[in-house]
Length: 252
Image (cartoon, rainbow, N blue to C red):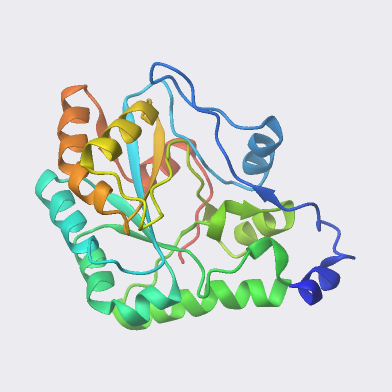
């Protein structure tokens, strides 16, 4: 890590690394983030939230490794006809090829979460490019699909340089406006806990981040989807959001 940081010292955009976070609002009103973060995302075509005047929701799942729940999540999404985006790592491709192929076959977006899950703000430009390209190449070899448009930076850590590199490589960086601490496998508290935490964060235009290693999420998901539909929410894909925002896209 130290070598990587030294190598970036003279980079014109080697600014301080930042940890993504959102500021939740009360009563299911739209979340916000730091003005600086908003500015950087706008400058480099990143997204974290949709149109807050419409009851649209965007489901995104991070898949670093498998804990036995993704198939059930896919079953729920298929039954309810809900699109989602799954951000996968190299480990997930090599360890769970069948699930990756199922995601693609059932029409979900597959996003780049890097090959080895490093802090993308702390590695050199070439290593950065290799992390993304290795993942995409493996995905294409596995599924036959060549399109990979979206990137979720591991750990939500980013810098101006890493956002620019993502855009230059043809990716749209995807952050989030709704989430809760759901990734700790030995701190599961039950489906009701997950349901309450998800529902209090939901707002119009929400990009929701969930982790598939959570048993709680898996068990709560049918009820979450059912109740959000009753509240008039519509489940959209990131492609629909990008089209609305008129962001430039590349055939990746």
